Each structure stands twice: as structure tokens, then as C-alpha cells.
Image (cartoon, rainbow, N blue to C red; front, side, top):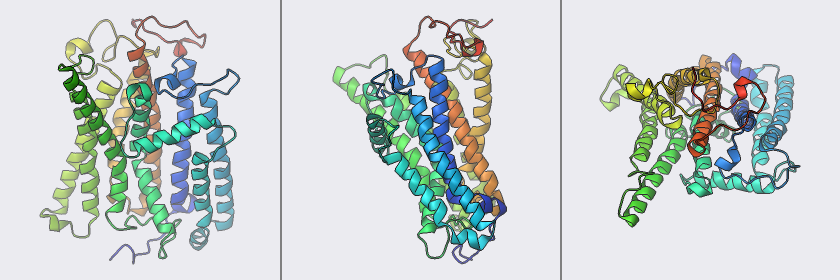
Length: 412
């Protein structure tokens, strides 16, 4: 039976948090998380705005960047809470009322869009323009030069990959809202718009990062051709090709997931069991490669280096000599969390899991956990970039206790 003709029962979780609210909640959570990133990193004297070439504050009387982020998050959180409260009062868990009042969560999505693009009194005009320009540039896979904020483009584009499934859910929600057959607050119709569009939307963030990596590779190639020799600081660009390959490993996961949702998987010349095993292998490759890259390349840790580097007495096992965070346990905890959540997120890329209504709560939890993983990843990715650019003596203690004291020295 076609999904358009089926009318599955609305699950209990969707009665409390319909799909549009889940999308909005994950996005707002991400904004709060970024504010916490900026706040903590500022406390330990890591200047994130300078790393991403973000406009500085013209006066010390202007609020710090993290405070502006908190204000935006608050501006978006208060109407979200009020909208949810009104929706719960009007619907009281009744499926027909939930479908009938779908306009309420979709009005909030409109508020969310306005909050990003409208000039707000507590957000600097230059900062808003810079953010929108960055979004416009990376939306087609563009990437700035290093002196113009390349690191910021990479951070934002990488964050979008963590929101790949959320973007897919946003597309589904809007598709159902404008459909005459479905309500956006009803059971999610994962085939809304046809079997192609949801997997494509999920794949777009990876296409963006893939193009960025290839752009960096060709930049290096052109620079080496102009000078007639390989620049020792950039090499021949092989690392960017390897990074592009990492992002390309997400495509088999998404494609094979979509094929498993096909009503006739046998037309591919393989059984459902074989197709599932191939998909599982693709998930393993994507998870393992991504985890390796996080630890070895994005965080510059020596866990996967040679035994000599990994056991270098100048630093704790598997880490590196120059570190900004004082406690080595921070790094080990981040590695463990990243390993676990990388695996679960690769599974979450699978649209074919979504048609089980009783998984809606679990799906939302995994999307929230991916926001947590990305939040942790940003701390160590920014710390690594800061260390790369500021090797040398540690700054003065900032009197916030041992946990917040930057440290380059070796641990005992």
C-alpha cells in the first residue's frame, strides 16, 4: 500500500511534540550550545571570534559575543515555550485537534526564520550581515580564504552535517503542511514529495563539505603550480582529498537507506537481507572514518598515530604535548563520547528507520545527542586550531580553578 493511502496512528510522543516542534527545538538547542561554546572558550582565553575572523566589538561596553548569542536563544526560546503551552492547551492530546491546530507550530517556524534574518535591536548589524553572508557562501559549498574566515566556514558547514536529519524533518514538515492530504502535526509521512527528496535533503550538508574540501585541494594545486614547487606548509593537498573521501562515505548510507524503503528492493538484484548487510557495512565505514578523522585530524591527538608518537613521554598516552585544557580526562571523555555517538548518528542517517512510529521519541533523542556530540566536538576543534596558531607559553592563570587553567606543560 502506498504511504499516501495509509493513515498510521499518531504515536504518543508526536502528540506531545509534533514534528515541527521537534525541528524547532533542536535548532534552538543548537543556538544555546553555540553560546555555551563561546562563553567557556572565552573564559579560558581562547578568542573564537579572532579565529573565525568575526567582527570584533567596537567598544568594551558592547556585550560579548556569547551574551549576544544567549539573547538570540532567549528571544527564540520564550515564544517556543508559549507556543507549545498554547498548543497543548488547545489540543489536549487529541489527534484530530492536533491535526487541526497545525498552524500554531508552523507560525513558530516563521518566527524562527524571522529571528535569523530580521534586524534585532540586541544583535549587531555587522554581525548579522556577516552570518547571513557566511550562510549564503557555504550553502553552495563555497569557502573563504584563510584570512577571510575559512575556519568559520568549516565550523558552520560541519555543524550543518549534524543537522542533516533535522533538515530532512524540516522538509517533511513543510511538505506535509502544504499538502492537502496530510497535516504537518500528524504521523510523519517520510515519502512526502516522493522517495527522492528526503534523502537528497539529508545528503546536501555532506555535498557542501565535499565541495569545500575539493575547492581547498584545487587551491593548493594552483598555488603549487604558480610557484613550481610544493609548499611545505600545505603539501600537495592530499589531506583535503582524504577529507572529501570521508564526507563521501555518507552518501552510500543515505542511498542504501532510501533503497531499503523501496517497496520492491528485490529489483536491485539482491535480497532485503543482502541490501541490509551492504548498508550496515557502509554505516561502519562512515562511522569509523569519521571517528578517526575527529581524533587524528580535527583534534590532532595521537591515539591513531604510531606507537612511538602515541606513547611519547612528553604527553599523556594518545594525546599531544601542547594542550589548552588542563585535565587530560577531558580529552579521553571526548574521545569516548565521540566514538559512541558517531556510531548512533550514522544509523540515524537512515530514513528507512523512520516509518516505525514507535521510534519517533528515539529518533528525536538521537538528534539531540548529535547536537551534544557536535557541541563537544567544537570545544576540541577550536582548542586545536588555537594551539596550532598559538604554540608557546601558556597565558597567565585566570584564577578560575585548575579545571579552567590553560596548560601546555606535561602531565605527570
